[in-house]
Length: 200
Image (cartoon, rainbow, N blue to C red; front, side):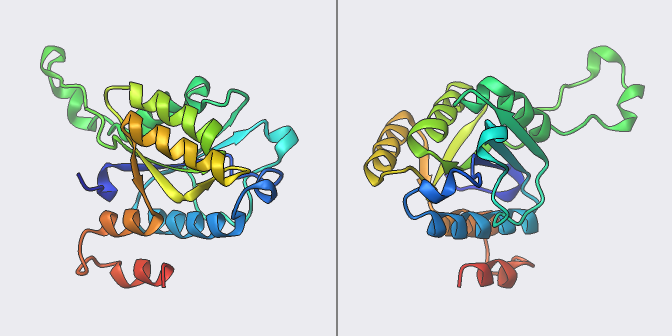
């Protein structure tokens, strides 16, 4: 199963000013997330941010230089408890056509979720990323992809334990570059050179 830009949404979890300095390989993680976020912007993939207790932990780091469609402040570790599922469904479901009013009510078809592939990066892998991903995996209409070079914890051991558990639960483990190139699908994509340049 491959990702496509048209069926994806990117969720960036808690990449905040006061959290990132304590994370294992934080500069490496932020660099990869920034590349992926830029690729998402170029390829039309919506980006949703979450921020854990932003009053105390600060906003998302300025290194993430991208346009986002929604930012969800949260206190629960699982972002699904704070409206993430509803946000993903709203963004991933096309709006009804203006001509739909002329169609009789009993013939109207509800549009389905067109962006079910949820690509996740962020911190901490074993807490907020894990709990959010496990909740999304319980939803019938989502697929979950974890960007392993875009996630971290304070310790390598905690991060790796999260990856083992997520893979066992059915999440796909990917890298930022894998995601970007699957989103394009071909070297003939009109933005191939610009996206490729991000990862060189």
